[in-house]
Length: 472
Image (cartoon, rainbow, N blue to C red; front, side, top):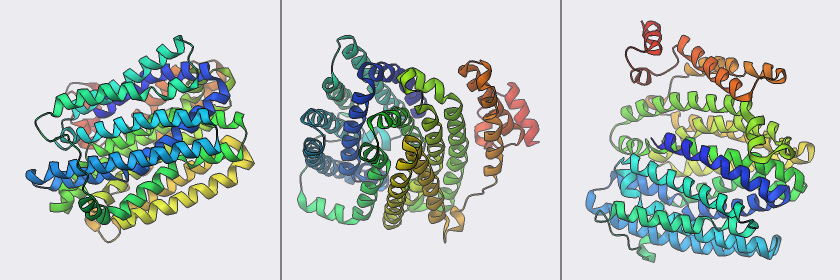
């Protein structure tokens, strides 16, 4: 439900992105992406893993201890967001311009509202009330798109677009309060003593999240310094599309995270089973997404940016490979989190930050936006491998079977075959449909789908009959 709701919202947001980039043009698009990236860094750093660790602790704590902890987390998150937003605004003022600083300040207020709403929705997440969580996520996308369309129609300049998150955030806070009222107190608490005790336990993970925030945004910032405005605009358009999609692997894995956390406490055999099945599904979905991005990149860039952004299509195709790897890497990152292995997560994230920064800094002067895309994709693939090794090392019951990898590799190879038809005038949508059909057919023939997924197919359907013959 969460992934489906988000995909629907993302498809709607394509409309707003297309209008926004055409309305702003290459230069202001680069400024917009830079401002959003600064605020996104503040969001990740100010969270410091509080939401993820909060879900882990609240999933495992007795009922009477859960919501006082949530109040402490809310107070801490508000404080950190205010401090981080002020710092980001000052940086934008000094490094860029007063206009960009004002935009960062507006987006920072929207971030504060989103952080509050995320904390308020913890009872929905821990209680696996994912239908309501999905509805709230979809509402955010729909409202943001509606306001973008309205501002474009009014001929707005850059600044109002960066303030869209404020009215959207207010609406969602009110909606969330109506859903969780009576289940917990919504008043933040500001106890430095309790913050210190909690922060001391999770400090390594907090530092890991800070490194991760920089890891995902370092390419944009390096592009803004080491390249020209046109290349920044191309990379920004590609990154904006990928930014929408990068949420999907997190939604897929985090929906199962409360189960991971409880199993990590009580039953490692169950945890191994859960991780293995989510790994298989994430590998399949990640490969399909990477193939679809490669095939559909020209159309996506054309819709979002128009003809002047055409050189961004190969950039997007390369970044799609990194996105596919992210699906797999996040499974094992959540496995480490469920086990409470914060120091290992810190070591991996810092290493990947350094690797990504070095690769991107070297490749940008050589190949501009494409070089940055190659660097980020290589770092993402490496990150997934390292996380998986860290989880399985010394824990044989958590070691998954890798037999799915060659099967998915063959399916991905079949999925990119339609690229050979690109120059023959075949519509991109038709190529995407053919690519997906070939990908799924190879997986079915090779019996790569987990049985639990096949059991969900209607018993009389042709896919179910084919799967049944394959299993027989």
